[in-house]
Amino acid sequence: MAVFTNIRNCDVSEDTIIETTGNPAEAYSTDPFAAGNAVLEFKVHYDESIDLLIGFNPAPTGDYSYLDEAWYISSGEAKPYSSGPGSPSYQYNSATVFKMVYAGTIIQYYMDNVLIRTSVVTADQVFYADFETNEYSSYIGECVTDILMYAASLFRECVEFDSLITTLVSFNSLLTIEDSFDSEITKILAFDSSLED
Image (cartoon, rainbow, N blue to C red; front, top):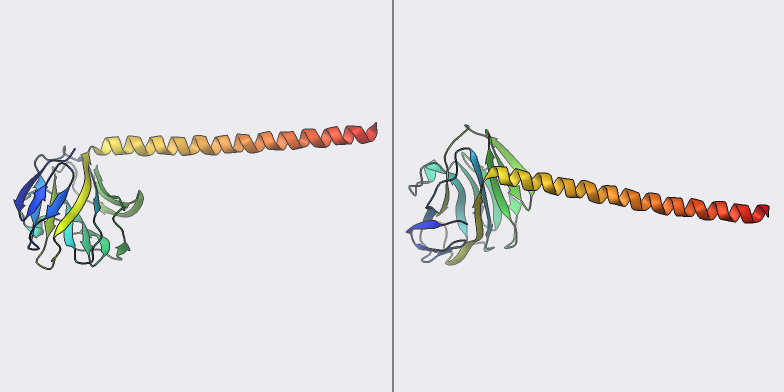
């Protein structure tokens, strides 16, 4: 669960941030992540007038200069923002799930569980989740939804579990193919036996 504090011009709930005025809006998580162990997950409402950053900030003061690691959403596109916006941009929609995973000395950026970018950072930093729009954003309404904050170790366990499930499904498919092959061999042998009789 994520609990955010409104700095200005937005309404916040457990998992949603709504921009209320069309002016720069700011909010940050009330509590920080554990040192060096963080996952921020969210969706962004699709609208070409939205211009925002959401990500990890060690000092949530409403200052863009501290927000070095974030997703940058602008003009209907998304891109990792690591000490400045990266390239290329990626298309997204309101159902796209964005993730940032901080573990060890890396931050990984995901869209719908596809790894987009990896940044090398200092280990054991303490981050807050930080949301900010800038003066170019004229959008008013629901900006960020389905916000989750949890430990990176839990994310790794989920990835490993998903990998195990994928392996088991593949193995089961191989067994099904093998059973089908054995069945066909049995039919061929039976047919060959009938010819001999």
